[in-house]
Length: 521
Image 1 (cartoon, helix red, strand yellow):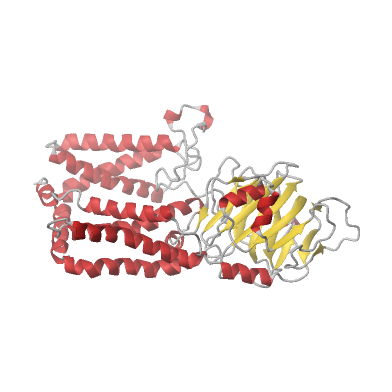
Image 2: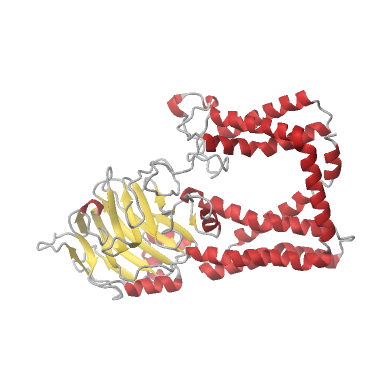
């Protein structure tokens, strides 16, 4: 693996996904069984392999093995158990329950696998249908063998907790629960900060500071700019659409204009002058900076002043206007801030027709190296105006006035997931959902049990209940904004409230658990 966090993995050009770049992986790592339909991005133009009917679920290379089979079975065990319980309540016989549970598990799994054909980053196959159906059968057997004990045990725990969980105790237990999560979330969100940037680094255009020829980029570059803040989406799109008024209003901290300018000075006089590496006696006479893969530009001194400002503001934007001279087989660094030891702070590179961006933070230099990949950006001798913007949590890429459809987001969910597994850049959004579910669904359980103590729901009780639902979401969002520096997100508050309400409804959805336990007699 390259020391700047990049490997030689080739990313399929047809996939618009954010990928984990690992030295020993040739795939995007999204062939896992969970979650079933994530990342919820569908393409109805997808053709099944070998031009066969999509109803045949022809596998495109789904990984298999005991662990995958176990996970697929485990996913459907609760489904089989719950369905068996409901069918027993309807008075169905054991044989009928087994038949219906098996068929329902297989049919439900088949529908999921069929939909996965039209999610470019997922795969479908009959092996999952078989293992899922087997899991449903295991759920039925579990219900028949120990269902009575499980339901009785669950009912007893809920009853005892409800007796313990008085309104007086709820007034301190619920705030303590959320306060604990807030304390845990603070260091997790801090993993997204630019806190570990390397100060003895130089700006390199056309390579990185190691000077390896196999990392040199070939093509023309007319402009390189830096901002010490994330640019608003509309402004970033206008700038890359070549609207000069928008660019002037953005106030970049550094601008290297190579078009029609034979000087390699920063026009803002903030960063050092760039010089040829290796030095060139005969500089080519051109209106743009022409890089032939044998020489590149390096700042005469470290850019520690820029790095200090990036760390302080915990955000940045970088713009590059370039034209590649080759596409197939290209693996060149267009712009990097790195040092001669091979450590990079950020690196924008071309990999075949794909644009790949990596930047340093505590999460990206851990056991997993995360890169944002945007396929099919580059075409031979085609001009591209690229802007990358990071607000302390969310990374966005704009190309020729358009933003890539998905954002690369670093929330507490990513470092939380990294504690138990190799995180996948294609799943960063999913980790966010899981994180908010872990915080607010159990909180909803507590709140839902507390509401059982209410004998009436007057104006005061309604106001307290509404505050209990909304305030934790707002406080958590304010905490994460404070740590990361990103803008306040109404969507995150809405998502939190939604999970909290779901927990309240879920815990009170079926108050007949003691009666359900008797059904197994």
